[in-house]
Length: 163
Image 1 (cartoon, rainbow, N blue to C red):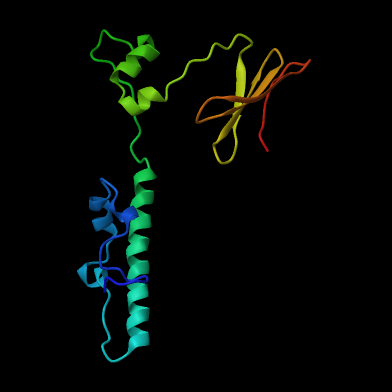
Image 2 (image 1 turned 90 degrees about the horizontal axis):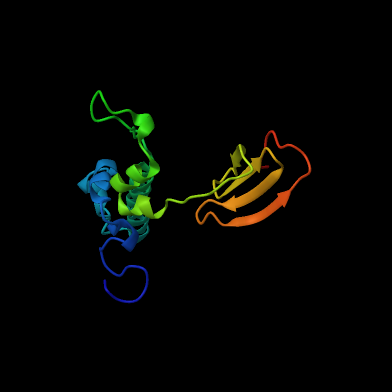
């Protein structure tokens, strides 16, 4: 019913209504018979258990569909527009012109005078550790490229590693 409590109707949770997820969600769906909860009119405990299980099946399909969107099976590439053009002459500005707005917004530029640099990412990918050959070591956040800590060591840096 539409009263108080958990059962406020048969509409999908807001997470399952995400734009562009419906075709992928249909791919992982187990069919129409699993979409709605089966009923056992004479047995309330069985009916409740079947309803919970149908919810778990729908949630599993949603999680599979959402995780598939994160998988990148096809890689991008850069190709020249003919025999006379070379990909080595394509600049970062040319790439940004052809990129979508979301990708272009994430672009950044750093002038790195004490290079060459060695880099390593943390296991969760949130931070990058960079070490320059002239002794500069910096830890930066990947999402904002904000330098969290920086130090100058008095030795040549040949490798960096996050732990």
